[in-house]
Image (cartoon, rainbow, N blue to C red):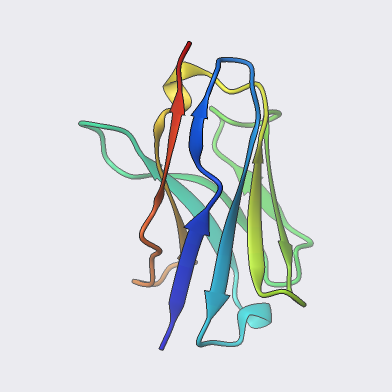
Length: 114
């Protein structure tokens, strides 16, 4: 069965960095586009970034452009989100998704606070 497992979240000070990982199993990872989403308390889940199957195309929400980088390693069935210059507004639970599907991970909490 399809499994997506996020890791790498935590508490970080404003201006800091975190790297999230999403380990995928149960499907042919290399043929699917993937995406990161986040949901802050009291807000709807929003798309953060997505990446094409081979990694050649990426797209970002305006709010994270220039600060976050999405990538993937198809040999390891893993997707990443490098988050730099973090702001308090980035505080949320971050989820990975097999793009445009109902397959989601359990989420990893990112808290940006001094």
